Image (tube, rainbow, N blue to C red; front, side, top):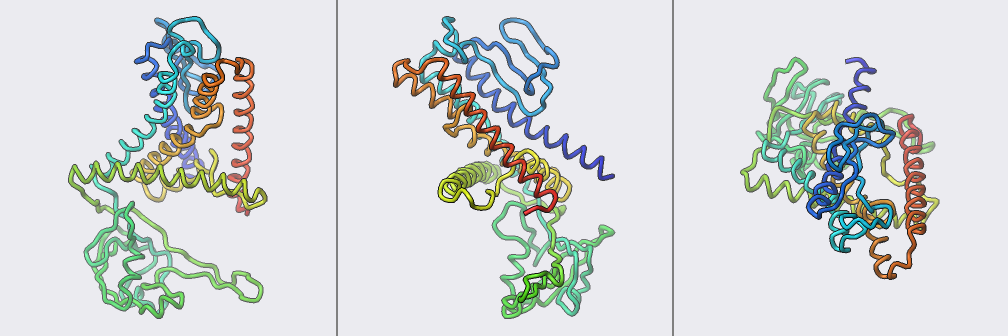
Length: 381
């Protein structure tokens, strides 16, 4: 596949994943509003300007819009103090909060559905692609050559989402003789044995098997005199199977773990920005970085792990949207709670100004992050 076609597929895949997670989020608002008896003015796929009206019957207009990065639900009385008894503004505070939280809940549910569907069908296994064989290493003695993929160690396949990788297992078995299943470039497999390097050799910087090369750095100048050749991950035909109960349990555990990891990451970013604004840019990605990562995962590890990545993005969208920052769902909840506490003293004009300022700040943050994404694509620090 040519580079241009591969790039186009990556872009389409990115918009499909991001758009789907956002549409699921908006469907949460849509169904919750319907259950609450609210008047829904519009359900839009994509963001305006409007491209086409898909359906215009009844009180809700369904539209297709030009910017393919999500969707939106427009409710009566969401942006003004409508007198309509079915408007968002006329519903009890708890109902309003539940409608706003429903989008976050749908993203968590989507992440759980993705993770569980993968475990129910079996986790993909991950092998190690051999880009280089160190002369005289256990790998060379065993007949392993560049282009091979090591799929199993002592009859064990390693799941893509497990805590232990093939490289971890090899290091843990330092000095032992292990049986390896090796898949060659012509798609045939061979079972070989190799006596791994000792723990002393590994501590000195040598790989247990010798299938990669560490970079050589000049201690005086810090320059790299010999570039490193790192090993790469590859999916294998093996699958890690679970019972139905274990599969559902693992799906939930992965949903919780992904959500906690994202919450921790957001907290660390906020802490770093407050304590040290001049620190290096945070390790986060905007649309460009996410699209690049989607492409890397899809083309090197395949569709199943790309689907897992989509589950992480859905959990990420849930966490980000519940942050108390207008115009995110968490920020809107904060505003309507403040209005109730202040007895309506927060005017409609002040509320709209809050959303405008919040949107401007979020947009500026997105541009800032995207700038670092672009620099990373061109090798910038």
